[in-house]
Length: 461
Image (tube, rainbow, N blue to C red; front, top):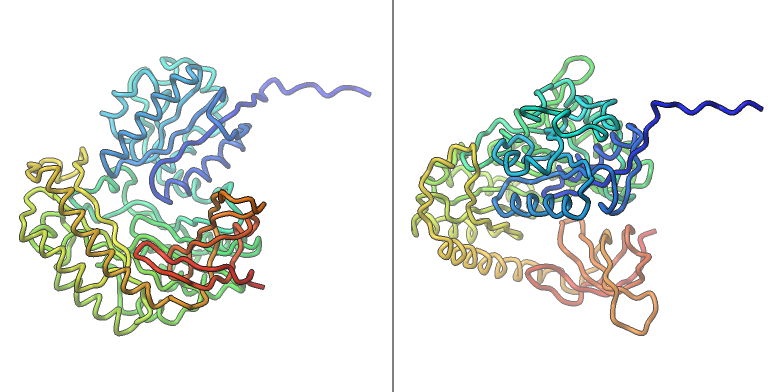
């Protein structure tokens, strides 16, 4: 028997992906993992001794940026021979690339991985000078973006999946880096999204998140050249046979239509949780932020939502300390929180981002004042959530378990478990570690602003 000759061009390499930031970055990492596997890469659970490390970065806030840069420097110290690829929201930032010039081997913007298809193994073997003598930033290519999202990902778990339906943003809010980091809005075709959703549901996935920087501005074009809006897309996914939940993030208030509200109220598989960032309660600050609506517009929208879809669980974002924010501006934000009764609030201290319009504004709100204002918002939100969550006391709720933490107990196999219910409420209880990834019924025995505690009843049949 003749032995097969080895293919001299077959070069295997090991890789590890480190992710910072949002669910979109996680979804991108799952596609990058699939891409690298196709390129003859072997994924590892640790960055130690691997040939390639991909760092998917977040640049929305200065703290996130510094965490990523610190981690990259540590990676290089611990594995000096590693070929490091910088991707995510910092991949477009020349100032970041200068800081990491002697550490990062290559910079690839999100979804532009097609530009280096077939080249990874060879790139790893080259020196930094051979890869890019001047600027390592790769060119824009919208066709490659479309190809990237067509790729079947390596999903992180078997019960929850993230499906990007669009990427980029056209809003150019003055504080936000997304339009610069991700580019203009590009929507995937509805057929492609539905195909991915059906495949996941057939595999038994119980929860699907539809992702986009501005998910409800979705404008996908089908094979016949017809545009689909977000309402039509979500109706089609809801109609797919199967027992699963649909959730989505993030929405922009200006794109929430009456048609969408009425549709969300009717659909059975779509979570009633609606995350609707207002960012400020002051019209003056909203104008400086380029948010394209007023507090009155937002109040009218919330009133319409509560009238047409009363089951909606409303959550929001509020930024404190935006340049020029006065005490009155802050009190108007606090007033919005009280009037809208947000059940979840993400309060954020303003962080200057290079390249944005607000970067040119004088940062005149002191750090301590930002912290104080954030503390006041969080305190008020927790009062609201604590009161609303009491309605779950004694109720039986369905929960998708996604975490376990071993309990200090002599009872073998018993863990502290947590997950989220259909309304996106955190639920905590004790139970068997094998319940992770399952839908279970829990009877709520106590409540608080951060979630619900209960007693395990049974696995959903």
